Length: 287
View (cartoon, rainbow, N blue to C red):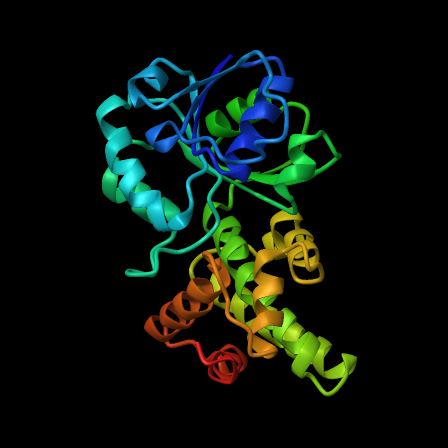
């Protein structure tokens, strides 16, 4: 199968290489021809790099892996070369300005796209790129899931039709991860950290269910699986950012957990859902 991958950071590169290892021909697009993700790893021969979106127009299946901050801009440009391919959104996050999920942005910018899904799970990019065993939730309709299994046949994929739930989990784990890092320094003990951690995730699950998500999604790979990975390891950018905030250190680079925490609170307010733990942690971290 011919796969188009949009996004050349670490995660985009990891997924491009994974699709290639599965035997697919991969057209990999990088903004301005910049491919700075995992540059020390050898590129498979069946990955072709380009800075022209037109080169991906005849791909059978698309993966969007751009950072949330650039998702709308990228998708808006993609519309000009879109030919009805199923689209798998591999970006976790919310748009800072609007609080929209990535599927909502896709619907705004390419409303004719009806076959789209979400890939979300416990994955650090370098481990995925080098073939370390991993799995993910693949949420979408049957056509999207079938294409996803072909594109990523060397990953363990947990099928779901809960597109909203998979996105809430991906955003929610970012928020809880930054909280977890902060509490590693600031909590009075492990008991308190576990208490706040659990209550925060419970608030996020209630928000998701109010939005139409399924409870079981929060127990899957995109839920507790990703939460366990991101909220317990200093390899996680969000967990590390929480540590830095607690220590009074400057946080550099894009930290999705900050946008996630603010965005989830905003969505909860719109739906009249109380989030006392998320509110309290936002205030304590000065976010």
